[in-house]
Image 1 (cartoon, helix red, strand yellow):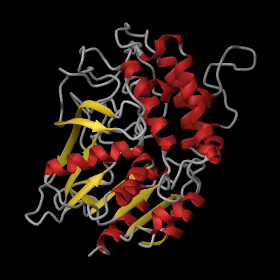
Image 2: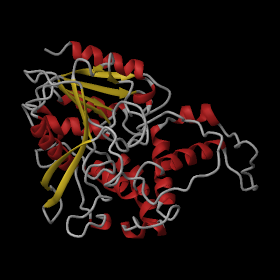
Image 3: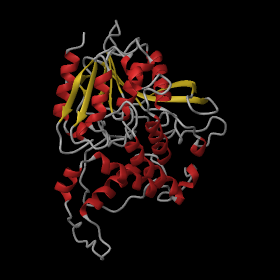
Image 4: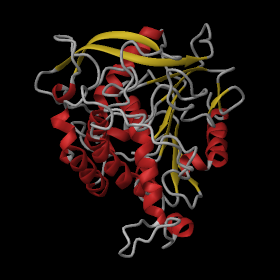
Length: 396
């Protein structure tokens, strides 16, 4: 549950307002950009009573070339509001530039001149992979409220199918932050032999009560928006979708992505310029900052997808049905890079310590110093990149 892009962090000088679409999901007929598509077919589901998600399509992007021996494949797993566009510019087909452009690309730690790099939009997503905004196979209308509950294990099962399609026997490395780190852990447990190393950034072995507590009002805010219409809002006009509810969810979430110290240092009790919040109907500066991020997300994401992916994050428990967390992790015997940000209040260092204690291939928690909080994984690219480079150099 993290902020997947950090450019334009400050509220800009506002031009004439552009209406907000009911959903900013990529839809059939839109420009695909760099996306490629794999029609998986039916996907078995872990928790849904129907047992299957039919007609699954996966949107993915690749960079570099797979070596003849297949030994240079790296899978990059995105976080909550990311997608397949891990690196590269914004443009037609892509709302924003690559969400991890500091990590992935020519000459970067995940060097696309050296590695065959793959990143796919997760199932339940809204940027080309089958999700709530996708056409239902029976009537062609968006799935909407009919879209089933998903777990992270369902997401990884779809990624394994894509791996088979690409002809990758095993990944040299699976890595990602937050939701991506959870999927890296699931890869190691679900598909032993298919991944040779993992890098887990800002994640936990299982979602904690505190993390669930922060997420619960986010879900409630979306569902309480009258324009959510139970999840069936895709035919709504611009500005008539559930962007208020999703915006509130994003403001709550973004407060957990940054640290108390950073927010106090940046904003303190300052008023937004020209406004008086003390009985004058104005805003504090930090409120304007959060509203800016709420507006940004509404213009590139989908409310139903936000619900389904957050629910999947809350399902995360590497030990479920496996004898508990310790038993599940101790069965993983591959190199593991465990990264934590010292000011992260959503996924604190203690979460990483537990992973390190039980993953036999971990060589201690690598702590990134940052005043920023959870988003330090994006802001402190120098430190994060150095740890990834050192880890890759140590792999056989």
